[in-house]
Length: 520
Image (cartoon, rainbow, N blue to C red; front, side, top):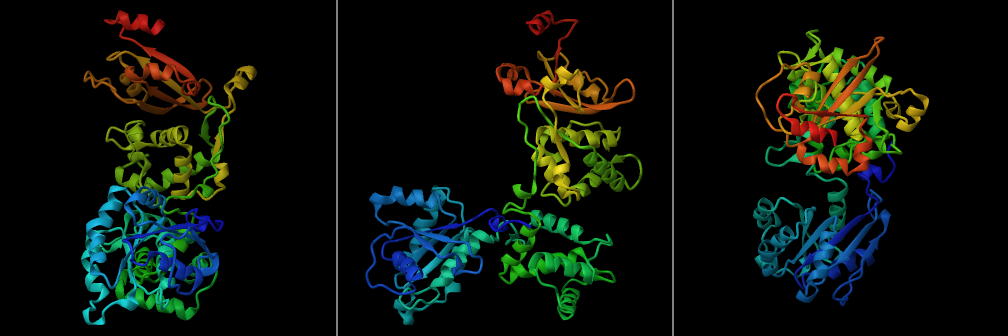
């Protein structure tokens, strides 16, 4: 289970910055929440105010920062806004000009400062508004909400009467700890793709009998894990009834299906309860970007540049099993749709990255072979161990995460022992333009030679399994270094230390200069 700060995406506090025109009630609002009373006279700008952690159910402390309205202190105000977790933007309910300034000045100013945090629009001095000119909050805010997507909530309050003062800061805290934006697309009125992918992984983990439905026992286990309380039989029956009415395919004879699971969580959001969905997501290790938190990724540390990170035998065995599971037509290759299915429980497919697009062996049909599949994972582990470990977990690796990756010993130790435990060897490929570097990489992947020349402008990789004498298999990673990057590579000791062997390519038929350069 994640610790307390992890349960809120790693946050141990929330910084609320209050801004708005002069005399809109900023300082009185802060004083009212801090003292639970109304003062007739307050300083123009209050010092930062720390609210008690137990003021709201999430027990996360809020620091409320007042800001000056004067032009001469604008720089100080801007610094505070840039450091905010959430902005409370005030106007006075008895001053229509201050409301108009929200759209004409304040939101453009926030955009100019690149303040990209939730905004709570607050109408202060509600007790002073002329009731004969009263317009509904919903009416006046509709256009503002449509124009500025960063607005999370609009609320009116009165520091003098304490009306809805606690609610202002409750909504501010909630906007940071339980943000809607990563979860929900307001235009389509549906959960965002990354949220659906996270919920799919959670559903699969909870579906212990793998029948693509959560039975009553599995639902109860899910409920206890996330909320520390079992579901009563009447509650389960109520969930079934609602889902069957709204999403007929959401329940079958085995239990709650994935469409039903999605509907239930979407329903909580539409009821204004994002904290319920976040409780589920954070319990399964997700941060505010809907990726696994670092706490859940015990990546082993390298202590020297000449060490590398590899998959363990346990991880390779798991990946072999995953390949067999996905290869439903048993042709020992994965089609694009099968690869998409592999990563349907990950935030996105890591293999869409340009580094991996053309780095592994494929069949004549362009499908990825078992060798290519394993080599791709080996390459990802070599280049980005945290990404590799995270994706192992996303696709269902349920062993101890710390046992999935290992760090190789230092090259100096291998030389001393005249033996190596490494399974992956990285070879840097140098050479002048049109010398045949890319052709060498293609040959490792079993691709035919092509006369079409395309200059390499960025690093390119090729990885494949090589059988040694005696039947042992190792993975060779070729790393093509563009000619324009050679001087940078040779001057970077850390970069060079990762190289196990270097190859210098030249055109033996026509390029004597390249041959001379390779010998320098």
